[in-house]
Length: 279
Picture (cartoon, one colour):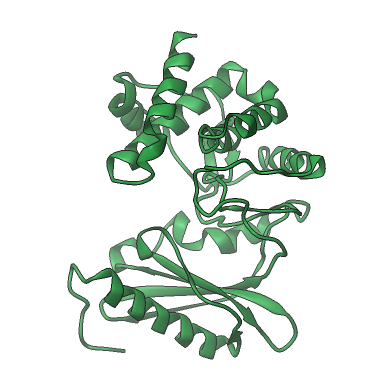
């Protein structure tokens, strides 16, 4: 363990190099060989890459956090997702390892590798995508299986929903019904042409309809795809609970916009919110 602590602010280049070193350290620990370039997660918090083990192709992911944040539902979400119904197409965590260095805690997870690729280079969709009807049916089936799963994990509670809603449109947003949700369903967390759903770190209880609402809000720049999302989940999105979920997701995304993430979606989100609030 290093005795030096990373400074509060380091350059992205330095931190990326440090995270890459963590990825190689985890590969050595699990006895796997990296099989492609690394992918960096949101604000460099994670790094991952395809790898090859003794028996099969796998996926290696390392998350880094300060000690005070290295815990809770988000820290073990991918591993906890192993308990979800097998019919939900997702990676399974095969092994995990945690260690401390440079004043931070790292968690490495070795998972099964699914075929396919995300339809978009970013969370928000910018270009039309052609997905088979079976993909949309499988997505609907997967989310229908997820909703009734019992869990003590919490994606978002009423206090946070109200906080984000007040910031976005000035009033609290009482949630009438809660269910189990993936909680971060967007276009880099799904695979195609065969459906796979990635990144289960945040799954837990959330407003009913959250996942359909999330994919819709991340599709607003491409109306044809947004329409397909709506058609697939019309009964969910057009219900009172679904309208609440759309408001909650839009408010959450606008909070991200205020911190510099995907500013191009701000105006479409505000127009979508205006339609919802107008009834």
